[in-house]
Length: 309
Image (cartoon, rainbow, N blue to C red; front, side, top):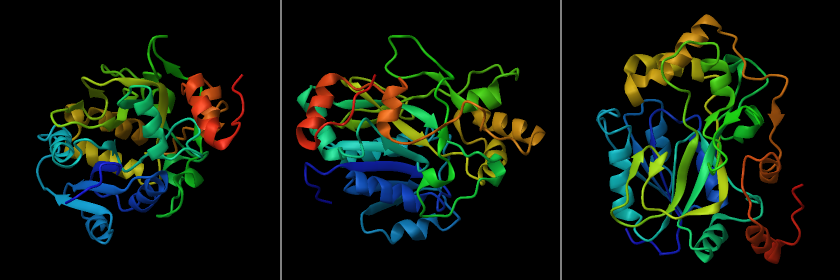
């Protein structure tokens, strides 16, 4: 396969994601991804046929153990090394959408030009869990529709981390609903990810996209809007807790399954939930960082984008 050096690539490992794939692909196409490389780990829900019909997707198959592949890392790192050397590359799950300050105006290509201009080769993000105002099991979603139509809410004030951390480290609705007031002997999910990297051969993700060495991250930060909590989630939590193919024997899914089993009508919505409006809202709330030179870069092409007080 011949790829132009300026093409932006996306990589994902999926299993049974046909519900989310149409909008996941469409959203990132609109953002500027030129080609997708997807590892299908034994899907049985139509994901395989759907992906085979997409002209901009290169699909790879494996029925190997997700756990033995270090939760897909070995597969994805191999594809990144084979195809992404010299490319800006976005590594995502099918339930994640990348946002960053003024992403409504600035596509991925000009974003990467900015990152290169400040000597950065990576964008750090927080994982921002999105949810509806209904019980999780009653959160309806139709394939191909924008994810935000089903799950437009997030937590703005339930995170922890040190002042030196580029983005919040833990917290959010999963900690609030599944960990707080429960006696688990392991922490809530780690929220820091580095999905956008200018790849060079020999680099490796070491723990999902949570950890990667030898990068120069930008002062600018982004977020992965995380759409785990559609109505299919309770059944998936049970399945994955039994399969035990995720990290540490799928202990997070054991947590989800246990809590939902005791409260089938669990909702993540509460009196401090915030409706997502736009990326600059996250800057205003302190969840994203936007240095002044990035504002200048955006406004040089698009005009004033508003002040963050």
